[in-house]
Length: 385
Image (cartoon, rainbow, N blue to C red):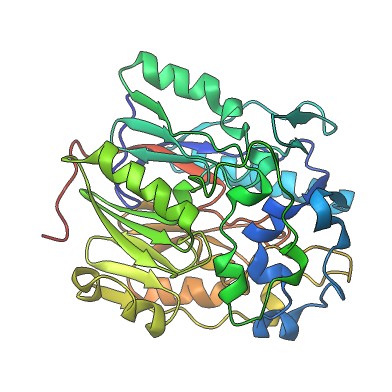
């Protein structure tokens, strides 16, 4: 099929599902700690309710150093089981499932002019790619270990390109320490970001650069809602606006989340949003505030596994809002969240439960792990007027 995806709810026909092969550790360094600052800064009320926390920030992130945070093998094995279960569920719904090339060796590293980093598997494939209609846009990464992640999807992208898709790569950042705008972390309610406050100078410093994830966007046909929290995001959005001029309308929201928007607000079908809280709804552009909204129940402690003090928690407890729509009336939901499933069923949705145990350790939910490439529909519809 030809690449064709303008929104998150039209009937799904083809999807890329991430790979967990050889996921053995997180590498803690400045870019990683900035990206996951909200969780690593130990200020989440809900996390204090549900989880033990790391007692101190990671000392290895000072002075350009990095440290390895291993992931227990049993979590990795259970993750792989759950991802394969997702593939089976999608196939049973008539969706063609595509898979990236696997990470063949967990010791693989990359080196650039300014830094070196371990490579992680292409698991959260939503993050570094934005699909808009018949165009693949590879976005400039925010975490060094993911710098070349889209190369694991090269075979898939090349096949779509041969079938007529456009394929664009946004400018790649040098990603020196001084490329990152730390203002979100420094200005957040948790206080100053002491453990990321020692950027090292580099001969390749060029100022704040474009850094931006596809998961910062909510696709609404002709309209694109984009979350901006740093100068890095803003620079990338400037590029995106110029590139898409005349084809799509961009609506910026500022500070709706640290980075990704898809555990804050998702469009389930035209006129209906799944929104974390009424406060989030108030921050949306005026046309979207007219849509009907579902506010999910608060996450419960028994929705999540119990982890050890040394297990690194990377997402908020709201990660299970990160659902995947199969069509306007069918939604794939984590089976660990029956309360959310019941709310959706009362609104007329068919809920497809799948198992996803360790979403908080691996930084993504069902929407994060997937990249929808073919949905029905032939044009960018105007849903906002």
